[in-house]
Image 1 (cartoon, one colour):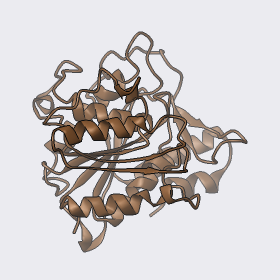
Image 2 (cartoon, helix red, strand yellow; image 1 turned 90 degrees about the horizontal axis):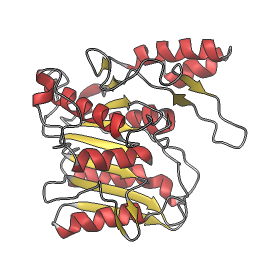
Image 3 (tube, one colour; image 1 turned 60 degrees about the horizontal axis):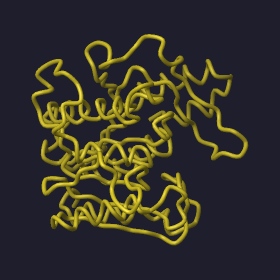
Image 4 (cartoon, rainbow, N blue to C red; image 1 turned 45 degrees about the vertical axis):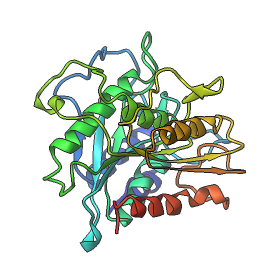
Length: 299
């Protein structure tokens, strides 16, 4: 199957050609689900620029990043063969709620999950942050809607509606925590029957989540309760966005006896996603796969 990376690397004819390649690759990877029947809640025409790809700077990791998402959507990545399980995971790429690193924190993650037999959905939530709103608000609206849509169409994708997880990186990890703790908050007015369904994920995988802790505690908007779903957390001790985000989230889950697993590695920094830089942090997919087996999500 033609992948996004193949098309982008092959064409190389400038930003217009790259965007054409992106559109073709997105269609080639699987069904594209538009989240909202009309405009997304509170969206204002012209508030941000045209969606497109950002070319990496010389000192950045050479990966593609997406900017100015106003039409939130998710791409379906279904596993091949007889290894398929009944579990699904919605992926939230990171990017400080300003861009989306939806290659090494998105499509590459979907490939790994497919290898475990899990149906994956890469969510392209709205970025950048909207003026006058909490940084996570539009993204959380999109995340809640995405979870409900997957749950509504569980039979279509041969998944168990009680095995829908979220996996997020950095800001996407914050979004995963918000989706796991604020699922009962009405973030937008209901638009159709989909919004009658629960927006609660059944598990979360938070990889170097950002913005969860400050001053030695979880931030006020992250309210862990006895109903918060189980979590798998990864961080590096030397992450400039402190590992306290993972530690305090883990401790809050432990307080309620909720199943959780925490890995804090000495070195690894931030933003490694699916890239192998030869450090123990890069083994997080193996550890996460083991956790999913323990949780009964893969065989």
